[in-house]
Image (cartoon, rainbow, N blue to C red; front, side, top):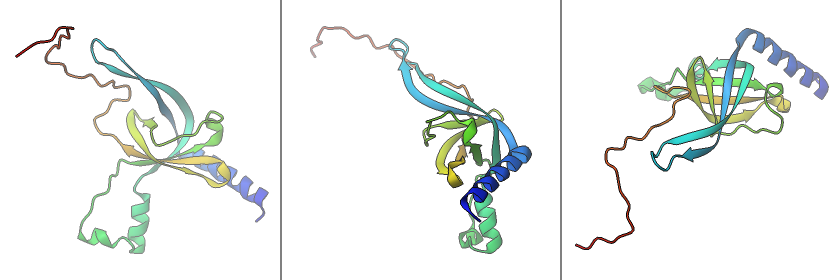
Length: 161
C-alpha cells in the first residue's frame, strides 16, 4: 500500500470511529496562576479548547488484550486496574494550529476530569492519542482555596526575646 492510500485509509478510519465513539470533550491548558496576596487564593489562568468529537475508549484495553493472550502473568496473584481511565483520540483538524498538547494539560469528559498522563502521535500526524488518568472527587472548574486559621501580621519592627 503506497503512502497516499495509507493516509486516506487512516482518515477514513478516524472518521468512522468518530461517528461511532465520538463524544464532545474539552481540553484545558494551564498557562499560569494568579495569586491573591491578601487571601492567598491561587487561581489558574487557562486556555480551553472545546473538541467537537473525540474518540473515547476505555483505559484498560491494554490489560484486557494482554489477559486474553496470557501475557499478564502478574494478575494471577492479584492486581488493580483503574477502570475509570480513558484514551482520547483527537483528530488534528479539531486542534488549534501550532499547539502541542503536553502532560500538564487535562481533559473534561462527562463532567469528570482526566489528567493527561501520556501523549502519542497517531500515524502520519493525523491525530493525537491522550491517556487520561481519572481524578476522583474533582470538579472541572474547581479552584483550590487554602484554609487560613490565623492571620499573620508583618511589621517592620524587630522583637527581642
